[in-house]
Length: 148
Image (cartoon, rainbow, N blue to C red; front, side, top):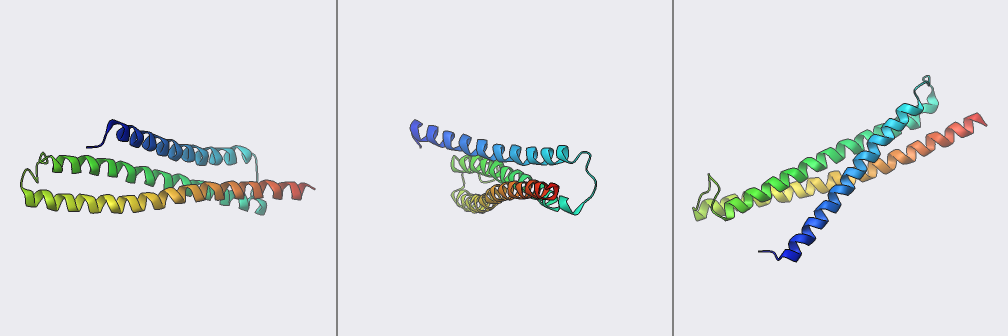
């Protein structure tokens, strides 16, 4: 069993990761909102292509972030089920040692897969929010150049 200090450290790390994920979700959504607001009276023109790329990137970032959150929630549930299995309280495995061992292997494999995909989507969330910001700046600079 983990010590109180280890549990507090894990809790702090988890909260920090969640805040970062939700910060990036808010940044992506805010970027989309800014783009919509900035073009509320615009007409279709080729110079909007970088802005469209920014919105597409932010939308992808938002989607990646949501998927990351789903994998994280799935892993939290899987960890809770693993604890139930290990305590012999799971309704399907009960106290049968073979069933407990099989359930542990299956749940641990699912957790490992979820962690891999969660990390992949978390990285995608960050990459696409930054890419969206770069496209937005490029659109802004292009607008300055075209007005010159």
